[in-house]
Amino acid sequence: MKNVDKNKLENSKIVQILQSLSLAEQKQLKQYLGSKWAVSNKKLLPLYQAIIKYQPDFDSPKLTKIRLYRSLYPNKKYNDKVQRNLLSELVQTIQDFLVHQRLRKDKNLQQKLLVQEWLERHQIVFFEQTIDKAIAQLEAIELKDATIHRDLYDYYMLWYHHPNLQYRLKMGGDLLHKAAENLMYNFSMNFAPIVNERKERQTILKTENYDLQKDIEMLKWLSQKYPSKNLQLYLERIDTKEQNPKARFYYLIQVFEKIEQELSNKDRKIHFMSLLNDGVKLYLSKQISIDSILELYKKGLTKKYLLHYNRLSGRSFTNIVTLADIAQDFDLTKEMISTYSAYLASNIQAEALAWARGHLAYYQNKFEETVDILNSQDFQDMTFNIQSRILLLQSNFERFWQNEDNFLYFQNYTYAFEKYISRNASLTESRKKSYTLLIQFLRQWATAVFEKNKGKQKKLKEELEKIEQIQARAWLKRIVNR
Image (cartoon, rainbow, N blue to C red; front, side, top):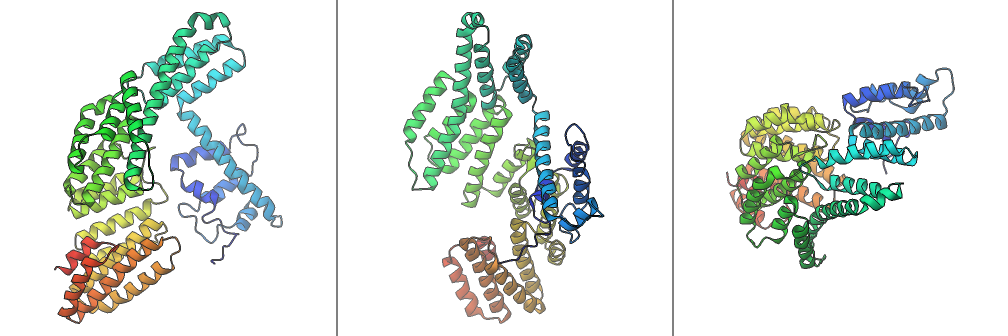
C-alpha cells in the first residue's frame, strides 16, 4: 500500500476546494477572510495566503503543515493539533463563504428567507410587502420551470397561513387554488423526467421493471389538467409510436426545435442533453453521420446548453475535440482550445489544453509534435492521463510506420504502457482488459510489419474481427487495412 505523507497538503480537502475556485472567487475569499464581521480568527487569512501561492497544482514539496505553522508561529515549536484545527477551521470558513456567495447570487432565495424573517419577527406589514413583491416577480416570468412553481407554491401557502385569521377566511380559497395549481405543475415537471429515466433504465438494465404504462397514463392526465410544453416534449419522447431509433431521433429534434423558445432555459438544456445522448448512441452505432452529431454539439456550444453553472465538462470537451479532428474540422478544435477551454474546471484546464493540442497535431499528421506536447505535460487527471497515453501509443506507432528505426522505441513504450495499466488500481477490470488488448494487438501487428511477415498480418486481421472489448477498434481496422 502506498505510504501517504500526512505532513503534505497535496490532494487534501483544503487543496481540492481551493482548486475549484476561480481567480475572481479567490479575490473575494481573501476579502471575506479579512473582514472582521465574517471571520474572527486573524490567522486564517495569512494561512490562506500561504497556501494559495502554490496554485494551481499545490504539489510543491514546500507546501507542508510544518512550514505553514512556522509561517504563522515563527517562534513556537510545531504543534500538529493546532495546525490541523486551523486547517479545519479554514475549510469550514471557506464553506461558509461559498454559501454566502450562493445567497448573494440567488435573489429569490434572499426573498424567501426575508419573508420568513419578517413573519417570525411578527413584522406583518413588511411580510406582506415582501411576499407581494416576490409573488409578482415570479408570476411575471413567462416561461416557468419546476423550481419557480415550487417557490410560488411556498409563497401562496405562507400567504394562506397569514397570522390574521380574517384575511385567511376572505382570501384563502383563491390562495389555496393557486398553491395547488403550482404544486401540480411542479410535480408534473419533476415526475416526467423520472418516468423518462425509468424507461431508459428498463431498456438498458433488464433487471429493472416499472409499470411504465401506468406512469404514462398519469403524465397524460397531468398534461390535460396542467398543460405545458415541457410535459408535452417528455410525452413525445416517452410515448412516441416511432420505433426506429434514427427516425425517432430526427422526429424529436423537430419537436424540440418547434417549441424550443417556449421552454424555460433550464428545460431547454435538459431536453437538449437528452437529444445529444441519443445522437451519440446513434453515431457510435453508425446510424448517423459525424457531421450530424457535430452540428448538435455546435448548437450546444452556441446556445450554451452544454454549460452547467457556466462550466463545460471535461467529457464534452474531449468528445467535441475528438469528433472535430476526425472530421478534420480543425477550426472547431482551435476554437475549443482558444475559447471554450476557459469554461473547464481550473484543475483540469492545463491538461485538457495539452491533450487537445496533442490530439490536433496527431490528426494533422504531426506525430513528433504530438509526442513532444504530451510528454511535456504531467497528467494527473485519470481521464486525460489514459487518453494521452493512448494518443502517445498511436503517435509512436505512426513514427514507426514512417521510419522502422523507431520500432524498438515503440515496442518499449507498449511494454511500459501495459505495465502501467496492470498496476493502475483506479481502473475497472473491464477497462484494463480493453486497454491491454489494444496494446498487445498493436505490438503484435507492428512486429509482423517489422518482420514483413505477411502470414502473421493476415492472421491478425482475422483475429481482430473476433476480439471483443478491444479499445480503439475502428482505428485499428484502419491501421491493418492500409
